Image (tube, rainbow, N blue to C red; front, side):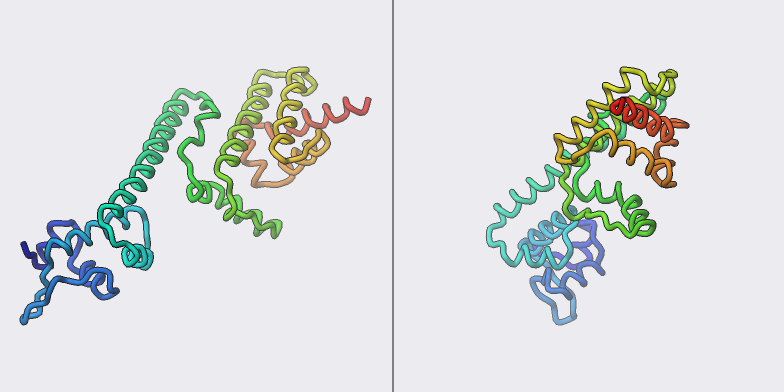
Length: 249
């Protein structure tokens, strides 16, 4: 079977312009060009185009696709590799969609989502997007460059879950009218500090006070806490400071 460029475009959902561009960059050559200048494609060309489109679904650049395909000689192995990559992406997207769905349900009920479920499905690139605004702010306000290229996804997920758990605990305590020197808050502070220390973030209650003070003084971070619960940033500082004073008595 042979196909004209228009037939290939219609069959595959691409455009004639795209097929011409693939030829121009050396990615997909037609089987032949007729005397009248018509490009003709055969089954081998369709198979190659199929693999190109699979790579495009994986967000490969045309340059990377060409490099990958120039180094591949076995179509079956290539398809198996693409199947594995696309399956992993599909599973990740299913996880993200489920997380979004559960987030919507919790938001509609006015409930806090279980922290262990909040960040399921996020990979490195998605985390970069999540913290992009904070990275830009820290760079502009404090000339601090956050390293997002060395993100440890698992570690970041754990830290995000812990941070959400800790702040939700404080928010609920504030909402329920607990005094800042409540013994339950002291135990939660101790648990949080223990977690930080176990994750190579040496922290004591004095340093937690400094962190809480920063959250009050810095507009970006104060607004983050205040959007969760009005007065939370000040409550966090008061709880930390009162517990630090207890240790000196």
